[in-house]
Amino acid sequence: MAGGGPEFGSSSGRKTLNAEVNLVPFIDLLSVCICFLLMTAVWVQIGSLDVKQTFGQSSTVAPDAYEIDFRFTGPREAQLVLKKGGKAEKPIALRAESPEALRAALGTQVDTIVEKRGVPASAILTAHQDVNHGEMIAVMDLFRKHKILSLGISAGTGI
Amino acid sequence: MQTGSKSLRPGSFQQHLIARAHKREREKKGLLVTLTLTAMVDMFAVLVIFLLQSFSASPELIIAKGLQLPTAITGHEIKDAPVLALAEGSVFLDQKLVGSIPDVLKTPRILSDKLVEVRKKILAAKQGEGFEGKINFQSDRSVPSTTVAQMINIISAEHFGEILLAVIGHDGG
Image (cartoon, rainbow over all chains, first blue to last red; front, top):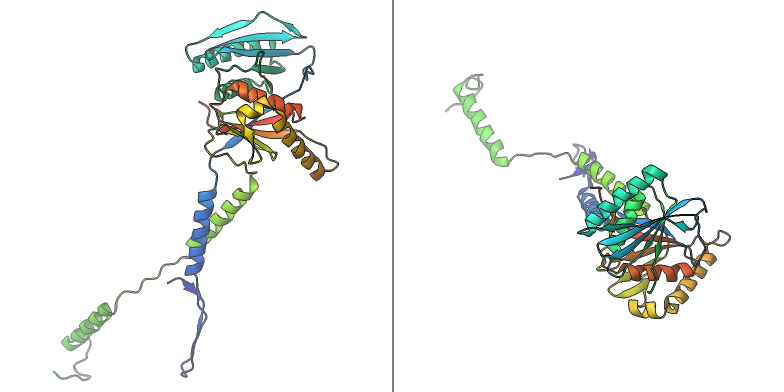
């Protein structure tokens, strides 16, 4: 049995003073605390992706900076346009067999753009009704991996 | 059998018999084993302190029931801000029901009014500090991106310009 403390007694027949401390309830209490904290601890890593949104026509991008305009045109196709100073270049069409393949193709394109022209200042993603939120986040994640940290979301026309 | 000083000489047969009888008595009384629990109590105390510290250190973000957040590698630590959640076809602001998603998209004023109240409360609480415009946005991964984009437009119209999309972190692969 867990316990600790000295025992005082004498050989003259007097009652001994038992100063032992019973630590069993204390160990039980610690076990219950640990079980409770382990069960309520959140082991899932929840993070957040920043989206800096401006309302209306105001833009936070400097006029001489590159900007990517990424637009979903379907669940497995998209269009990438580079813009500088409000002028759009020729759009790059992306098509793939699956959303993962589309992201891989997009990653390759962004690698090429970053290599040739440096990291764009921002990227605007336009949503599509056949593309879900998870897919949109995956594309944002891809841009952030390429150090494009200023991201915005547009609902697109006709919505 | 005679017992006496002569018969209890060391090595004598009588002494052997007495020693064997004492040994049997000891065996019948049982074995007393002590276990030192000091190290275990120390370990428990350290575990409790560690779990209490990690429990209170990180800000909590309550995930709405049934919500499957999208995954991302580049997410960073969540911040303390109001929470707007799209879950089970409804819109919740700080765990309070605002309305169904179609109703809110049809009549954005339902959500805008609530956001104005939240903004006023934040300004009242942080007097002199200014309004940062942060809001946590939780949405199930299966919600159409157009719905999310429209909600974000409604939010940003009420000066919540820094929208923190909640994601689940996972190892890169």
